[in-house]
Length: 564
Image (cartoon, rainbow, N blue to C red):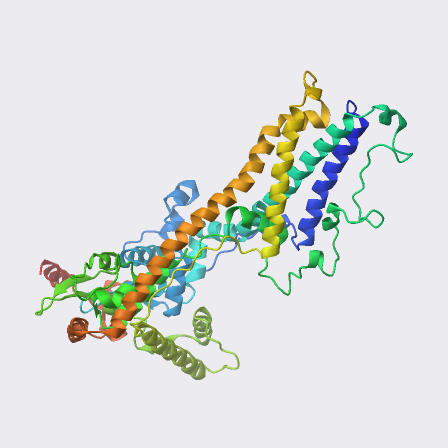
């Protein structure tokens, strides 16, 4: 700073103080920077592996095929672990599921559910069971999560990222608030320096001890009235008037800057998952056969229902593709949709297998399904609690699926989740920042600076002035453009919600044609086929010799079935 004038040195101190104030504001909002120890989240111990190897496995006992291929090549060839929705679906079903069970619980397609179950069986050493009719059941131990974590390097990396990502994303969000404050500080500091520099330079020789000249004071303005820098001073009991513990959902001021600029994400990010979960439960409750009127409230019908016109039922095709349905023409010439693959279940099967579990395994099973076991210490009582919880959930699922007159609503976008006061403050700062950038450009273009080379702080600000101007324009243009786009998107959402509501109303209203189609669909319906343990003919959990299977008869039976 030796080549800088006293005004520029003082202005630089002002900028540094503004940045420090932003950090203080960040600290006042309750953010604490994590230490390296708090980020060491990758597990360093391994759970004991299952000692039984699947058929054809040539690795040593206690070591899976995935562990045999270690190193970078093994990591790259390792399949991606299933998402959390799949893991929760398996947990809630008690570890014994069919593809249809997972699809209806996780809100995914049958093909996606099958793919993820195969990956989970590979990573968590699950077993496959085949019924006498050739239906597949996936079986996982109560500790399949720990098995997955110990065998999957990608899962461990994902778990570590899930802990670090919120911290990084928070820092990114608040950085936009810090950048806005820093931009305003730089712009107005340069403006003040330029305006004061046009006066008599004798102030530099006199110094600032006599009170003349240009000075900065950023403390609370007890003598000279309110100052814009007073917002950086906060009370430890209630920083800037917001108690984060009493209202944790309210955004901080720095977060509200990001929210004002970019919004708060898509409120319908999981809408497709909700859609197919509701559809699968509805179809199961209806016996696997539904009409277009029954599923229209969950899909995207292109037009309003009209009794006097032929209905275009092409909007049902996504449900057929995702959930394995096929259209069938009735004797009356109507079309009904049959979802036979959704009517297979193992989650509601007889719980005789639970009797073989130890008390500790039953406690883990109850914990994985979110069942409270407080005050339960006996195995028989614990079994009764688990069975009662399963029966309650099954009845609730049937009730939810039986509501054929309901429909799904998409949530409209909100411009920002920040309070109106925060939005007003951020908007005012954005306007001040843009006004200051435009005024600073006018000063840089003044005849007073023509032919002069600016050094120090003014030289730095002039060098980055195009960026400051672009930043100021973008800070106003981006929210304005986003506001117009959200208005258009919300109109489309409102239209889709209205059409779904009209189709749900038409279903409740009924009519001769609708009643005829519903009666035909109920006539073709069938109950969910529950695959019990006594229905199992083969399992990968035992060797062929232990099960006493004749491979020739097995091949002949299922090859003939596939040919048919």
